[in-house]
Length: 612
Image (cartoon, rainbow, N blue to C red; front, side):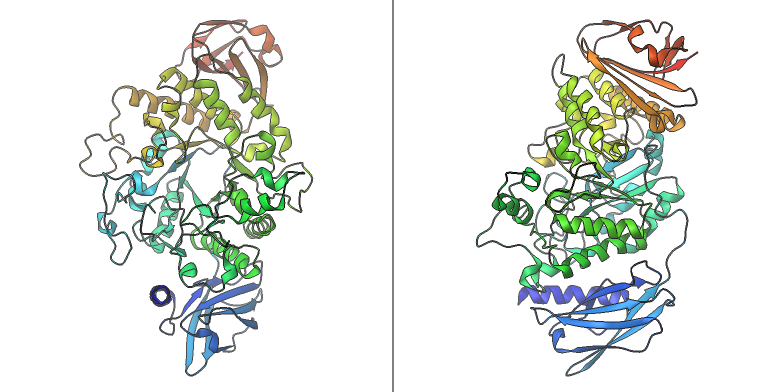
């Protein structure tokens, strides 16, 4: 009963915020649009005993009520509508007749034709990833929100809320631009009203609401619009696989089969190999797909067509409501494979420009490529239509090369060689670390030379690079526990002793300047983003590759990964260096006068613009 009361209370708030509604009734999606490519619309109606009513539609030209469906719970009703292409925007009146007649005014909006909306991403972009709660507090008034399950902030706790918000991010758009970033990726901004450690955003409790401690839905829409006006794109982090255990649809389930359940609590086995193992067991397959990600993250049953449609409509709704430029899809492999194909097709058909890249934290090039558009045949009926992925293979290879003395460069070479598996590997997103991993600077032993090598690779390889907040100022720590790599950005709160937004003394300043110079050079020289790539097999601890185009531009990236200076015979690279006599190292401005004999210092990477 308590769960039902909580869900009904939420329903009242949302319904009253979005439309003229009968008290205690909520409808998802909260509003919709005319002119969508898919004319079908599934409305999930929630209210105490609502299943005992019969729905009817007051005549509205172009809209047909096709059917209604009762669910296992008496508190839900599904209404299926068809909206013809020539339907006009307006207020659609639904009547729910039972002991009393309830009327709901449901809004059909006109689509937004602003050309700046939903621009997508290209290799020319540079993504800055951050955690809103830990980045900057721009509006202290929303630090504590009455009625939320965690109504305090405690910056001295790695599990508590710290108060960062959308306004805090927006206050530092100039910082991103100075760094050379062109896109912002916050971890999920939707409501996470969980009683513990929900600051990260991956335990959703309301799919249609921005977490009030970050701002309102309207403020998020304005945030995206302001970012676009400032030349920045926005990537929204989303979760398909699971919700939080305090999600209103879990507290008061429409039906038991909306979530996966076992006789006793059962985690996923976290082993995606079970999906395409030709010798694998059905049990392992089921445990991977249906097991819960964590004790407070129930696994959503996307094999249920009503659930699948609910999720698909939700993520169409966010794009049309806000104009975001891309989706980063959390725990991508864990979702129902057939649903993933259905979801990807629906999103791409409606928004062909929207960027999409998934998290597939896998151990081999082939297993990673399996979850992106690839040249492989279908396996168990699954053929991925995800355009790109977070490139864990590049991440692992860079860390492995740099975290030990004279580290092995072959993994980085092989990670790129494996690109033949993809339809288009340039849509992948290479990175050095993230919110779930030990910070890059700590992993490489706080070696500044190695840091610059990693940054040089990140910003000159193929794909759309992503940087985790604070990497550019040498934030460090190991993920034991995760909160240690999710610390507040220095200067994001009034009274911080250090403010890296305005002043970066010492090596933190050197690090920022290195990233900024290389990122802005990359922005000004498309050869580093759209140019072709040619790599040479690493030799004697030195790895060399080139970015070049048909216009005659060529950039050489050469990295000595050993503790000794190396003399490199440049004649080996003649097929790329012929016609060029010298070069300029783009960060330092130093002249490389001899391309035939290159003396590369220990633990040094050069990014060299070749000149004739």
